[in-house]
Image (cartoon, rainbow, N blue to C red; front, side, top):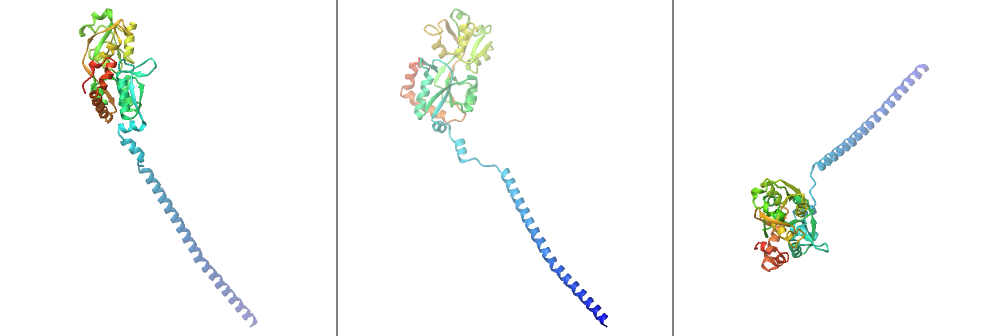
Length: 311
């Protein structure tokens, strides 16, 4: 009997222990399940945040960034405002007497130089002269290393097509310059093909040589073309009539040279960047300076008054 009671108590104790262990196991399971759900939620939210940040970054990279207000103002500003803003009118020139050349002190003078100074003064800015390679004048303008070309520039189709040009202000022609003792050989266009001519690269003189199919050697400036003839390395030169009148013949540095026939008739103008409003401003200045006599006064100083076009 005592053994039966002892066995019953052992069974009862085992059953209670089993229930207790089962109860502990069931209480741990919901806790573990809740922890897994929380971790899953945090991971999902983190992934969503990273995805949103990636999408925002991608959208930011693919969306063009608008230019600053200052850039827009600079791009839309007129050429006149641009020059006034920097306070300087930069003029592209070559050594070309009587239009642009240096005096004994090294200052640029001449009909074009003095007119450019007066125009800059009317704008309230300083003037700066830069010698350029004449063949690159359009590139210099477009690159904004200069603001205009003011150097006895003939208004050819190439020039007017690539630049915003002023009205004509001087008449001109291309003429033949030769040694004085050879002048009789250069009186007709039909006689010219047997000679070699020095011409300024990119100039109206070079265009005439090409048009007439004349053998020619391009040089940097018209003054270099004169030196070629004086040195005997070219038979003749084709240069502007205004330059020839000022630089060859008795009383000049080329007393043994002379000019003969004219090849064409042409006009000078000043060139600005295409679309520039400086051209209209210069036209107004030309009108005012012609009417008040200052343009003719400067022209007389350099002996070109007969070539000035009425404004």
